[in-house]
Length: 225
Image (cartoon, rainbow, N blue to C red; front, side, top):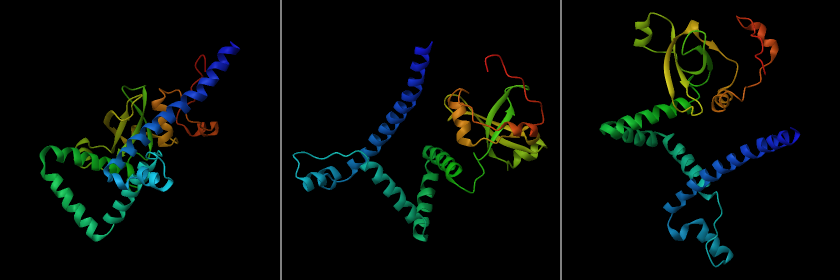
């Protein structure tokens, strides 16, 4: 049993580290492909070859990441002024006129605005709702509370919630839930995502003294907890 415990402890160290390194390495390699857009004589590997006088190009991983960050930063500086906003407005108007592209571009733009906008309240709160039936609970993220026609036709104060699937939280269901049936949790969005991706194994820490604030009794621990 002790040998098994040591083996599991070692795996818990190396598996997350290995997965992290693999994903970061994959992302860096993909970003480095952006260097292919630069003329051959101006690529960093060729310039380093000329600088150090080596026989072949000097490849240093990460130059593509720097290039993409600079391009994104310069793009942000450009669109922040009047001329940039005019150009982007014309570009978006063109995208809106192309039938298939219009749907994809609008969806991608709306998603980016929701995730990266500080003013938006979407994906800022973790909710607990009774789904798929009463007595069963699911984690959800609030996406909107101003629902227009949906709000008017339900005759109730409702919020729009996104219930992600596990272990892939990028897919899921959109549910319209009465506000009185929604419980706002203290956990952060990234903590909830970790819990979802880990199939509920990684549970965020929560201080026990907050239990008194709950509207129901704390359940007894299940066998094996």
